[in-house]
Length: 193
Image 1 (cartoon, rainbow, N blue to C red):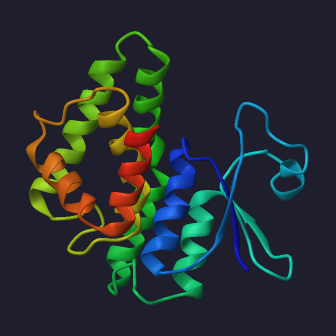
Image 2 (image 1 turned 135 degrees about the horizontal axis):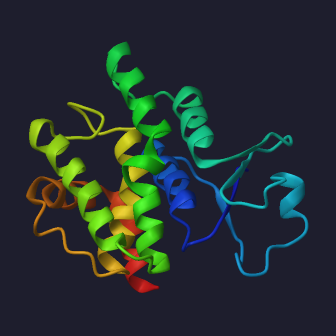
Image 3 (image 1 turned 90 degrees about the horizontal axis):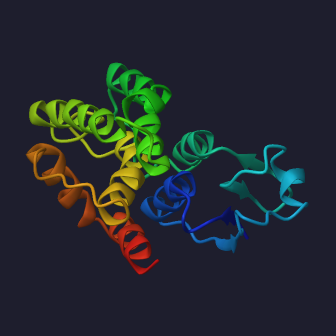
């Protein structure tokens, strides 16, 4: 059986959970207390971070982006990367630039850093502009880039009180994604915490 070492509050782990759900894959979830990480977790990931994906037979893979890509290659249906190589390459660029496009600003707001609201607003405006021109961050179809970004948007709106009202395309994208069972389950999880 496959195991996912996860933490419900962690958006990186949410990426892996959503991808597994989109692929229809069963797994055992092992919840990790991020405030008291077990020593054995460092054997699976020397950085002590979740998610960590483990298959029967001892194959262990840390890091959300790598797990997402592995699951896409190992279980190609349903596809979460576009068929077009150019769109896939641009999607990988979106993943690589996540911190600059959203992550850093989100964490600055969470820490209460000075100017963080304006910084996050600028990042959300950038995402909104992209989504005015295309239905998904990946392009024409829902995919791994959307999976990679949505956990932070869910947490920003549900936990940090960020309003997406000034960003109608982004707000519509989040609502459209929230209809998907995998994303809806993650949103419910965040709301319940």
